[in-house]
Length: 265
Image (cartoon, rainbow, N blue to C red; front, side):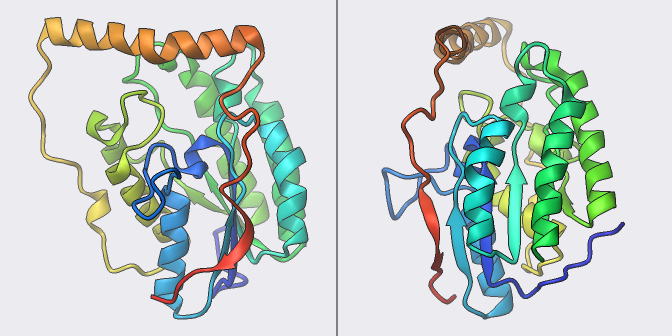
């Protein structure tokens, strides 16, 4: 089933998920202690393209597993009666050994069906191809299976899909922050435009598809130093949290818990 908007122009958009949707590491220029991110930008594109009042909530919290998103965020979003939701989760699960992508997909599809039954359009997203990232590339097979499931879910339910796996521009390391897991401000800007395109929202800017100019290769010594710094600064702490059974999102609340009207463009 090809995506066809059933509720556009959308007037109440709610974003669900983990750190990707929370917006790490795109600092909000208006609120330095908060992150902005692609979902915030997408909400702005919706308002600008339609000229109608758009209410927007973002329930995403960093570190959340798919089960937590479904249990904690889905009921809150359903109660708010959105006409558009984005659900992007499962990446944290897939990084863990033994994760079952098909089981995750079944959990995700059940949530999508609930929203579709309530009359809301749904935006999903595939995972990024990790072939160029050491350590993370070990999960590439699981991510690919989960992506195939996502396309099948979309075909069965009529959801839209933001295709990160097939986006060549996203493989540029300059669009990723130092942790190699979260996008930079420019990465989020492009992702917001890509999400709008997936929904068929006209934005008048197709430049997000254009890759950045080629950059010179890293010297061997520089590459080794950067890889070592990444492992010390990010991989080590991540493993430490897994061993302690803690999460970077413990104790955090959603940054935008209720739908609020965006300023008119």
